[in-house]
Length: 72
Image 1 (cartoon, helix red, strand yellow):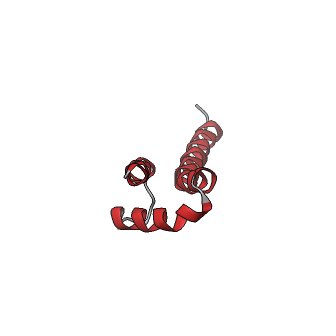
Image 2 (image 1 turned 60 degrees about the horizontal axis):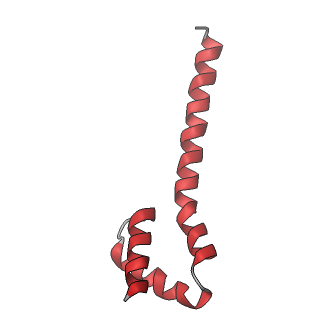
């Protein structure tokens, strides 16, 4: 394999990983904006903040917590 091909493959992998991270970080926000009624967003934000202490929002725990809160 030539050097140019190796550099191209490595560059493509870096771009794919970066794109995956951006999508993973923005997907929960897009779901909240499109699926949660406006008047319930503040309560959902408080619930997610209380259940998830990390800086990066996790999709499945946030959705499970939102569904559980909505069912109550």
